[in-house]
Length: 248
Image (cartoon, rainbow, N blue to C red):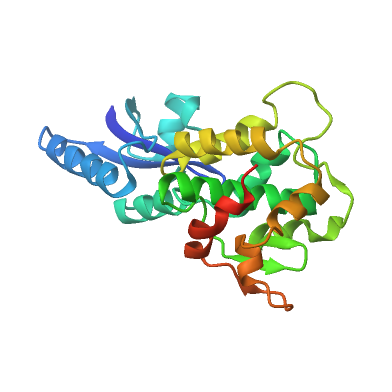
């Protein structure tokens, strides 16, 4: 029998669980395993979700691992530690679309309302923590701040409600949990969820028109940026300084 020591995590970009598979042939590998685990935690963050498993199978192949325990079926084996770390680090950063999907799992929105809520989630988290919620640039359009990935995905809906992330199943969590898990996996995931929930509680019941009026207030970041032409970037520092004018 062959002993396998396995590190596992999730890759949202690949849409699957990922694993590093080490063959345990001698006791000295324990030090190598310890070093690799410490490196993953150091480079990816101490709050990253990593599980470890030891299993015996008939040979050194991953197929034999899957035969020994179906838990490992459909897991993608990564060839080296560097690639494993790169995949996790990529998922530790959010895009605006990740926040949008979470919002849509809880609230039915038009794309206009969604844009404003995603922006306000970004602004609140930024002002509370000094850190960015997601990596997207934010632009000043005619009707307020626009987040790039959200605009590209949902612009075709126009003034119609976006239903695809929510569906019509009333079971709480069936659409929310995948979107929530994606955010929780990110750096400071718990803090980001708490901040997003706080923002939705404050602004989620406002209409799209009311949210536009809010972001159009004099001295607010949009007002400081918009010059009559779209795709003027609203700088992070501008949001830090002037988001206070958008508070309810």
